[in-house]
Image (cartoon, rainbow, N blue to C red; front, side, top):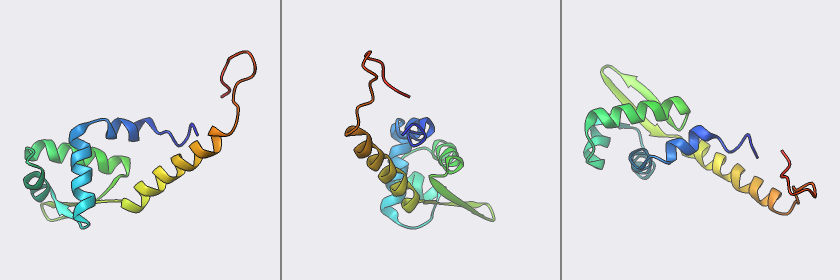
Length: 107
């Protein structure tokens, strides 16, 4: 469970602009340039570029550079797999008691 609850992923998803960009890319279903995404989401180009770069470093997006254009695509299968693993782990742990009788939660 602890391994699956990646703080970096949750930090990424706690920022509304990044969530909006990720949603836009998932719905688009194809690689998009920074310019396309900025126009689609009505967000300043430099802000979009910075956020997409950090999301690619975390592995949520694929980035492919062609000349001066960077194309970003949501890694939908990997994202779904991560959330599915978290949900499965929650289902597994919810049926187990994790207190040692002294009120302390096990690790």
